[in-house]
Image 1 (cartoon, rainbow, N blue to C red):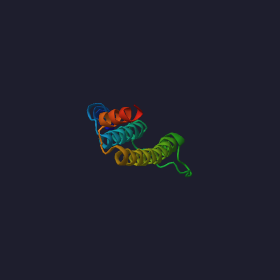
Image 2: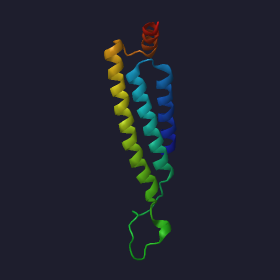
Image 3: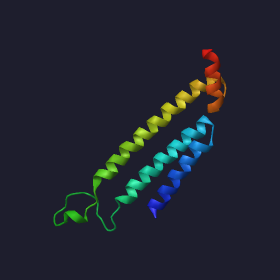
Image 4: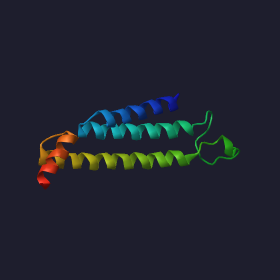
Length: 115
C-alpha cells in the first residue's frame, strides 16, 4: 500500500513541476517528490514482525529490521530540507530582483537585461 501511495505522490510532484509556472509551487512539487521517494524506500524495506535492530541474547538476525534504509532516509530528509531552504532563498532573490513568481516572466526579463 505504501508503494502505491509513493508512486501516486511522485507523479503528483511531476505534474506540479510540469504544469505549474510558479516558482514556489515548483519547489513544493520537488519536496513532494522527495517525500514520495522516502516513503517508497521505507515501505520497500518494511518487514512485518521485525524487531528493532538491537543486539539481544537469543534474537535471530533475520528477525531484526535493517537499520541502513532508515539511516539513509534520515540523511535524505536532512538533505531535502537543505535543498528546499536553498531553493526558497534563491526564489526570494529572484522575486526581489524581477518582481514575479513566474518562470517564464523571469526568463523573459533576464533576456531583456542581457540585451
